[in-house]
Length: 223
Length: 167
Image 1 (cartoon, each protein chain N blue to C red):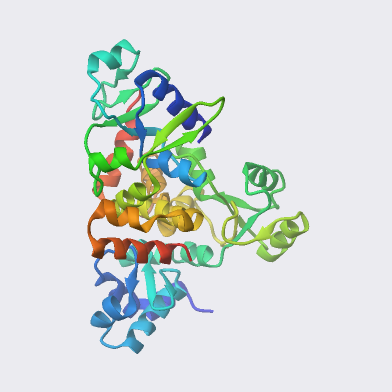
Image 2 (tube, rainbow over the protein chains, first blue to last red; image 1 turned 135 degrees about the vertical axis):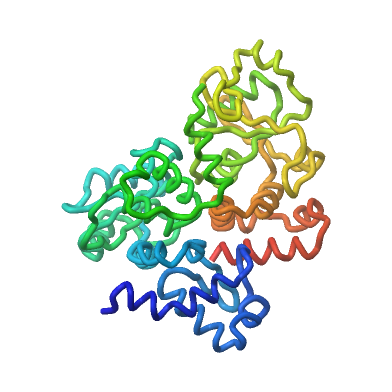
């Protein structure tokens, strides 16, 4: 099994490639990747490296880059466990309703750890939660438990299982790193967490100044 | 999100036929969204500070001095177009949603919402676009998108991105 340093070393050419792409929502392999990579085969090789780390999603001749790839290397290295956990996540739904989340919250396996939406809401009260992301020790066993309780695995459910990482030292910092790795609205959660708990962190992400100002303003203003 | 929808009903009752944009619009179109408990809306006719105060709305003394509803929700009031969508098109393509007891709120149209989110393209906008793509792809009227953007290249780019995000 590769160490994080080895994984980063392997993916380095992919990360350098990603940093040269102009920010866009989705890219064309032919029009956007080939001019940077030099050839179609190199482009797919670079994308495959990124995909392995959960930093790219490829579908036919189009791809998307996780904006976490734009974090400096020393931060990206810290994000790798979260990126891989998110890449291998399993999503479940039963009634596709808050009742699904309540059921799982009431039946959390021993040693599980809630992260992202619900944990960020607990600690910041900044952004209402939508999906329940739970780190579990044995993802297959928990998946079976959910299926035995009429949950289906798919893309639209609100319960997401993540493989628990062995060495979570600082709970809040882990949630913070997960938020940066996931991107999307979770970036706002990461900023809110940093504003409240940043002094406890060994490492800090790089965010857009407009997003920081928005979160700062929303958190400071009281009616 | 239900508390935000109830608040939107109250705002509509107090301020008239406003058009809700932002997270509330995403929620009404997808029934699936996160929010930071602030409400953004466009008004057809501007509302004076005096009128807001007379209806118990109040201004914060901190930050950018935003307005708050009588129930304490932060609001942003727009009196012009939003990025990518002109004021006239916001009005023309808005959509009414029935809430309860025959009450309704007016929300930014699906196509206008997509264009605005695509234009902003921040992390949170991309997540909202993915949400829309996964839940409403087949309801998007691409002729309306073209009509609003008036730009074939941009319409094609939005269509490509939305279809990719729906996968």
